[in-house]
Amino acid sequence: MMRAPGGLLLDFGGVLADAPGNGWASPEVVRRMSEVIDGALPDERIAADLTSGARAYGRWRDETGVSAEPMELTHDRVWADFVTHTWPEPARAAVTRQATPLAYASTWRTEWQVRPGIPEALAAAAEAGVPMAVVSNALCGAAHRDFLAAAGLSGRFVAEFYSDETGLRKPNPRFAVLAADAIGVPVERCWFVGDSLHRDVACARRAGVGAAVLMRSPRTDREPDAPELAPDAWIEDGHGLLDLLRGSGDAGF
Image (cartoon, rainbow, N blue to C red; front, side):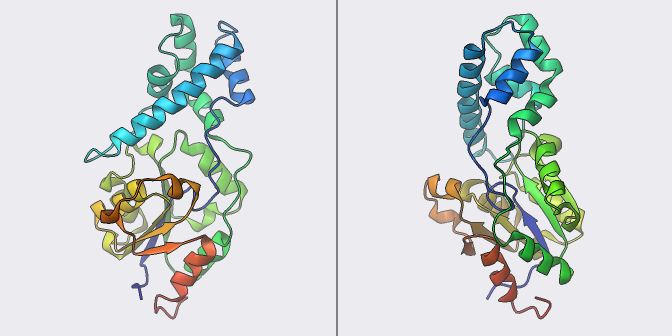
């Protein structure tokens, strides 16, 4: 039996919401990018560079994740380093000026859905007086925040922390400590719920979080094994989280 949490730190994609694949090169993003650069490059070139840029950014995320305290890039750096580095200077400058709106458009997914059981689990935690915070790596956290607001879940969280806003990337332990401080609960009394061994469980372990809970998602199954990062519990969705909370021995659940 796991000790009942004093606070919950939850990832966004794969935990609070389903996390479909990268949409950088969606028709809408290509259209937006073309408008920003006033048609300086054909749509085919924009789409190809967005696709290759997304892959390069993904490799960078994996590489920086093994450092002691990974940091996030600013929106303008993401575009400049991974997408527009071979573009004409006027087009590069135009993208830099619109870096944040473009990051939002590239992050937002019409396919996002709240994961099964999450509303019930969050309601049970709130009823038990357990404060909660979002701790998420994100190209543009504002898109995540808007989704949670539209889904009626924002009010469950004391705070929401996203990597593009904090400058920190999981598994940087300072990310978890920042969130624990915000909800007023010692990090060793918190549960950290994520869907990635190498980002979420590693962040929890480095920060000394009380329990690391791994919620399975398609990303979980794609990750290489890491026996040294075994979570304290595996769950399938929000219903599994609710079961864990109820089984923690706290009468409040």
